Image (cartoon, rainbow, N blue to C red; front, side, top):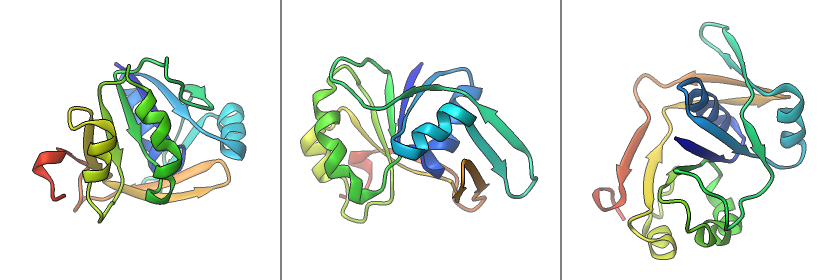
Length: 156
């Protein structure tokens, strides 16, 4: 499966690395200093519980164009960044599934209206952490596994 991870913070880095480790073809979209760090160091993860460290080197993109083809985009940006990226997602009709990994108390009705109910999937990450330099230090949340659900099954 071809996966684009839109956003290279803690959640985007963690899920991009895990998808690639599972055998998927992953591209991560990053900008500015985070883009430079990923180009130089790769995606560096450190499990805060075990101390285990891994480095993954996915493909890298600086932008999403309307012609790009992916099986899925995992959107891992802050809610206040959605308005900036929404036009790119609307224009990208070659992508059938858009998974939004964010906590949005406003619901998903606006996303569904802009992108179509057949493309929008809501998710909530089962991990948290910090970005320290070029290293993502993370912990999985045992009480909150990663949750993915269809928008019509979730509160709007």
